[in-house]
Length: 348
Image (cartoon, rainbow, N blue to C red; front, side):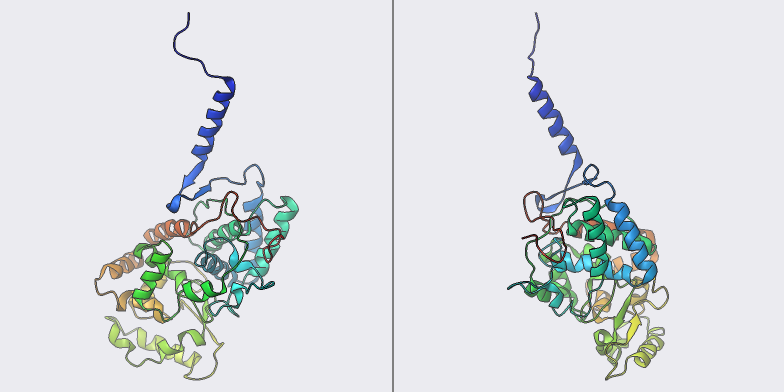
């Protein structure tokens, strides 16, 4: 005679599968779900293909690492991380590529096209363009000496783009600290994320990469370097004055709009914490860099900037965590959106 109860074999199988699924999921803000090893069974070569193409692209053009990192940021801040930034104009839809922060500025689309083509050959209609952007951003940082992190996957691609959203939500190079805080808050990111991601967040009007690696066009920093009152904002100005003289030689008051200057003169090709050292000395190239210390009246942001300037590993850990958080902004998953065959166009 038995005691207790017995379960139907089908019930046991169902419960076991449910537990395995729940264990494999990682839940972020807004209840959205992205998954570890999402393509382990359906496309196990995805990360290898992305990494190979990224390394080749960066070897050919070192600025491409910063450009691909920026591409992911510009995607996530408009409608969420859904590859809307990759869509070309079609029918009545105007591409985000034509918006002021992006036109003649965003780069790396051909690299994503090449990755997508190879993935379609290996795993047709499996890997989303949004996930490609997320993996490429992580690898772009790693190939330049920055931190790595586990990219949670399962994003779907949007069916439309937002030209107006790209003009509205991507931070400008002359944004005030108050504007930047509000902008990040709207995306579900806090002040800690703002400081950690500031190395890539304050870009517009011709910026070509992340602020700890890459270059900017004269058009985007002319006002900053020709402001005679700028030195009054800094406790340390001895290194700012020669820095400004160098920039003025590159970028006069008029003309040479497309002349490039490195965002970090000391380590322009590496991902490191020199960005924070630079802004503490008043050597942030763009106005929106320097507001982290000049407009922080409470002093809390300045403390975080000092901490990152003193401890690169602390900055790397914070940056990785904030990148994971940013990568989950308004994610499409499950039956939402689609997996595009061509990242530039929707499937229908």
